[in-house]
Image (tube, rainbow, N blue to C red):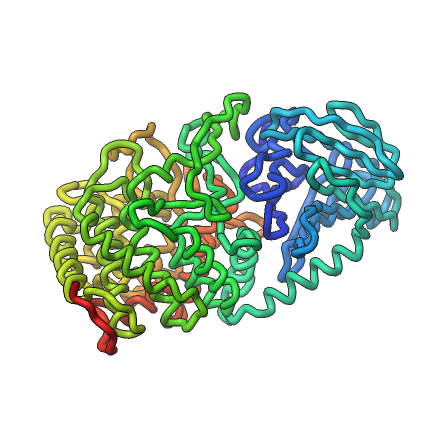
Length: 614
């Protein structure tokens, strides 16, 4: 069976792991017990033999689906030849006392008489390990392998083998059958019974209580709310870490090798994460993110990584799963990410900007944050003149990327502001010299007069959409002639079907074969620039273009392939949803990152702090 389009999937989750279910009722991806654990359903990257769980009608059918408002509970309605069936899929949010995780499916026949099938193929170890399946007491069926155990509770006659658990059954109007699939460590006894309907009520209440806290009150209420719910679902509740996506190796080009593991937390997301949560009124989650950030980067500054595990893990090696053919034969399938070993200078600016925004918002963060800021900036003094791999994690030679230098400027700028405004101690006069030097260098070496644009790297003629962050980060006003010109050049040369590329992979040697989709977040950064330039109608057209890319339940991948008319890259992608939220707030003119940083553009505030010229 061929994998469906990426956009055919909907997200389920319990804030510790996530599953993807397609329009046929097949759950094709699930990692247990954590987001970054080995998957037990891996059809997304392979075949049926690598694990999936379908519950749905036999024969011909058509489906429609939607999330219940304010929740991550999915209702899928199947119209079959002889009747109508609805399947409600959800994962109860785990509490601190319950380390078991469950995936619940409630099947209800609305009308007629429908022949149904259940097919459950469990494969641990990313589809490589066939478990031992046994019938337990009552209607429980258990699959075990090594440390893993998954139990299915279903009030049906079920056939089991070492290969699969299956059943054929018929539902008549009014019939309801619950299925509960529960993960626990294999050394534990069978999980206690779960009342599916009670769990549904409790889960619905948890999600709706959470979404009611949102303070967004604008014209894109449903889209912003769905993006916020998606970000909450991608937050690892025990630590507060927000991962980039719940998947690995969904390709940026079908059949290509730009396939990466995104079940990790990137520091470059940190400011957008914080401001999205803060602007929407979720201060607890913003503080939890800051706490995760401080724990992850604690230690020697020369060991700072661009990304970390959801628990703050440092060493995340990259390897290939050779037994998996990949999504639509896109190899290799990778787990882990070698970018942890790269030098990416932009992360210093991201961390300092995040902590500065936390101070400005009055968040309760650990008192050690001040010492960490000083330590990081002092280390950056000796490092910022080095080339690096950059925001896009180039896998070839290091360069002096303009975006990297911009974020070094941000690091010094925010540290100076924290001295002046928030009582940080540090050699502020020395930091000002570095900030001024960076500013002069970026303007003289990063802007190409002949092209009329800021370029990807010093001395380069290649374009890069990351320079759209220059006004968003407060380095230059958006209406500065150099930025106005840059926006025009990028719009003319990096746009494809109304969407922005990161850079042209046909021209830029990034160490990989060329070809990828347009980058959704970069498209929204362009909209932010247009808003700040007063070109709101153009920005709105662009924003609505992105809104139209969302799938039927409001989810976005990392990129969009205009030639094939499909979403590509890992899914759903937090970065895309952060950008959507931020642009929606930027239209308000005060809360988004672009508007916020523009208010403090340039060379720091006038507050009084303690300086130490040492």
